[in-house]
Image (tube, rainbow, N blue to C red; front, top):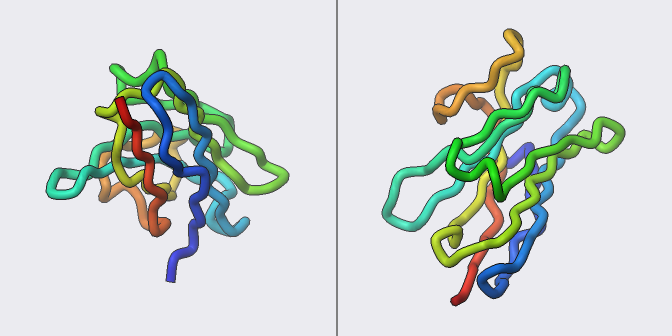
Length: 126
């Protein structure tokens, strides 16, 4: 049973934007690292970005930093991933994940995250 719920995936044209949302129960959200991964069928799941909800510290895969932005809404226990200037290479299933943020630094490995959502599909056409 998924404890994280993603939304916002869609089909868009290249150059477009999407905002993904991830909502978590309070007991998972508070003081956690909440991150986004993406996966193309048949390939490894790739870490995209994460945020430490305790202080809002953001972490990015370096080559996505200039197009993607992660943010949080503490009142609604929600983390957002704003994706701009999308390309067909961004096409993937996007997964939200949450893990311990005890040290305030979010990891980029799947094993750093204990809770996962079912994923939301992003498709970018040229």
